[in-house]
Length: 453
Ligand SMILES: Cc1cc2nc3c(=O)[nH]c(=O)nc-3n(C[C@H](O)[C@H](O)[C@H](O)COP(=O)(O)OP(=O)(O)OC[C@H]3O[C@@H](n4cnc5c(N)ncnc54)[C@H](O)[C@@H]3O)c2cc1C
Image 1: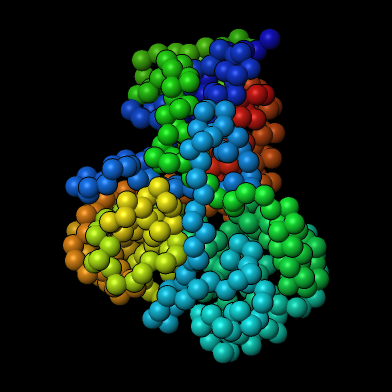
Image 2 (image 1 turned 60 degrees about the vertical axis):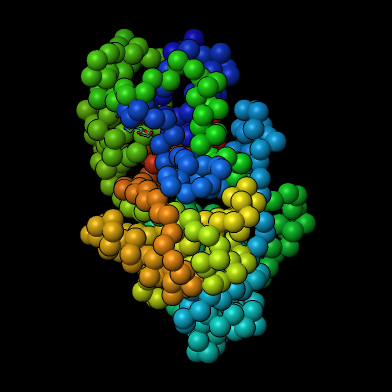
């Protein structure tokens, strides 16, 4: 019976793997390179701001209709602390104003011509183009392709660039023209696989979702997502070792020795819940082709800047969840979440909390700016978009090389990686955002599966 499991990487995927392995009675150890577990999840108090609660530094919510994180929170005793957004509308910055995102839509893809026309986001020509394309009868999608390849011909360039790319490209600081539709937008892939009119397929999806709808689309946790990490860490206790960077995997009989600079951990099974380039280094001497595939997964850089200021210093009523900024508008910011309006647990009645993102794979301007220049530029853009007046308290959280960019064929490459490791490195599994999904539900799902293997 194989039951010594070593998990490499203490992000949410690795911790979920360890949680599952421990639940099944296995002897599990998590090795995390840095001093803190959580990886791309963190929350903390904003220095200098008189807020009585911590604020998320990256993910502030997760899909609730994929139940993995919600279920995990219940298991960890956080069920009563799950919260949902206030339901306020979202906007797009277009043509010098904030305009409501047309509804209905699926993952940012609208299908009602009148709603698109009324939004003011798309020009008259763009609306006509959209109207001419949305009912085109298309052949069913067979192979994976990019979101752009599938959707541009069916909605037109303007709708694609002003409505779809800001959401789907923005989620991973990338570009919807390069994003695998199967790996990055499965719901749209399902609509395209039906063939026929895109409007009919999306309309059907919306009515099915409405019929099945129970509960909110998104959830967060009061006090921030860090609490999920802390609860996992507490549960796992000294099975989690921080400051232990894994440098090598060596064969050890039928199992493995997981080597850090100072120690060696015997394992019957190893779960690699690390970024792809780290996994590449760890598998390279045993499975060189798999290492090459992992090295070729590009990552995007993003920065999240939290602004806190007295509400009276912002002219806009912030009556929504925030806005997206299409690349066509030329702003440095890609999105601005009005956290204090979006989440009741971030509303202290006095302050506006704005979480501003910048950075795309094809817009690295923020990396060339000093912190002061970056903040000054974003403040100028907040003045233009929401009427910021005054000096906010600012917290800057860079997330370099943080968001994997799934190119077409990504899921096939994941299957090939699994097969290559099963042959060359039996007992070693790849999991987490480097594989089949970067959203928190996908990370927890994959982690738990790896921990249960
Ligand atoms: C700015 C931002 C906003 C986001 N917003 C959302 C959101 O709103 N909703 C959502 O669902 N998702 C969101 N995401 C995505 C999500 O947070 C991540 O995809 C997810 O947290 C990745 O988890 P992971 O455990 O797979 O990887 P990681 O979090 O990258 O964890 C990998 C861990 O491995 C460790 N490690 C690396 N090398 C070694 C080594 N040699 N030895 C041991 N350990 C090692 C790292 O230190 C790290 O702790 C966001 C991401 C970012 C960056």
